[in-house]
Length: 547
Ligand code: C2E
Ligand code: MG
Ligand code: MG
Image (cartoon, rainbow, N blue to C red):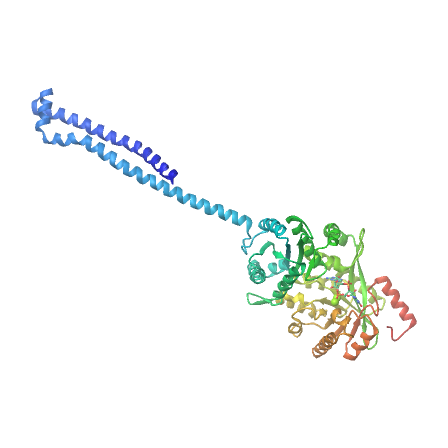
């Protein structure tokens, strides 16, 4: 305040000195005018300018009396108005300075807020999260508590964003935030890191299980579909967990390890994973692998294995499912689960799908020429399924390879329909209009099974191996398998059981009327050479009941 009044005084002084100068000019001009008027008056009154004449004019000429007052009036008026003006100008400057200061403070606050918060959800961002984690570590050390850091990623957020548009993507994020806010405590920090990635810092954790309970609650909130623009979106999330001090002593390490756990959850298709040092060992290898996969595809390091599908009644091979593997130059033989999720995330899935389609159809053509007439089932990722080029590409391939379209079965999962049901339906219709068949893989594991089945142009369902595995010992699984078989038959679909591992399961499936069987009980997936040899042997033995 002192500073303010000083500024005001200073400004008034400056203004006064400037305006007083003009008041002085006014007074001088008035004074000169008065002298001139007195001299002229003396001249016109007495015919000459003399001291007596001047004195006499001053005494007798009333007009000169007014003029006499002018220099004083000018000086006073100048002084007075200059003070008022100077004062007003001074306060104006102070007001403006204060306004400017307010604006600057608001801008500084906004800049600081923007630097630490996410623009869409207004949640703390990565920078602020790190700060909060560091602070929380300090108080956890004092209170001898644990800390839990969860990193959550919405499955296929990028695809949802690309397909439905950024506005819908943002709405989904906001709805996710509302649900997460309902689960976390006020003292916990919910932050948005990137795309569909969020972090939740849980304070006051007494034991590991507290963190896991929260993860379960979070997962539960994702079981209800999200309503975006009138569309019901089934969205899932994976979560990586790291605990302080068990998994790291500082913020950076805890965040990095929760991230690693998240990647592990994605790659193993688990809902959540807790960090373990084992994940660290795999990590460098996984990171470099992303770059290597493209090269691997180009260098033909991928191999297709084939697993037979057996007709329940004739027990003969009705078809094969092509299953991809990667013969990595350093890491050896890798299962699809080790690189397909990664290919889906990095966009390499398209290249991989083209490779698989070309090679599977090429092999099917060879067998067809060798008189092995059987269907070929090819897996398609849900992400590949959002690609509008896909039907034309497959139709183009069909004309390149000499194999009847009705021997080609494309296996999709229920997840393929969720992101863009209209586009998915259009793609399916174009493919089936050319005679290609569609099978729903891993049936029973999605959420939307029954509703979609009657709408889709599918000809087959494959019951997920998780139901088949225990159906002999678990009545619930047996009931599910029976319901799927009945439902499939009511809709005139071919029903396949995958993951059949023993004779008892075959017997039970026969009882329930399943049409086809696939699993290690009959044959593990085999290389094309091994598969051909096996078929020749079986032919030689001429066994009617081949399996
Ligand atoms: P899927 O399409 O459901 O394939 C069946 C999986 O079950 C195969 O695993 C197969 O080896 C395995 N399996 C078959 N019979 C048995 C059994 O009796 N017991 C057990 N425990 N497992 C059995 P695989 O080859 O590791 O493939 C895993 C998944 O990777 C596939 O599941 C499929 O979703 C995906 N995949 C495989 N190849 C491709 C591909 O070319 N493209 C895409 N997009 N995905 C693929
Ligand atoms: Mg499959
Ligand atoms: Mg399957």
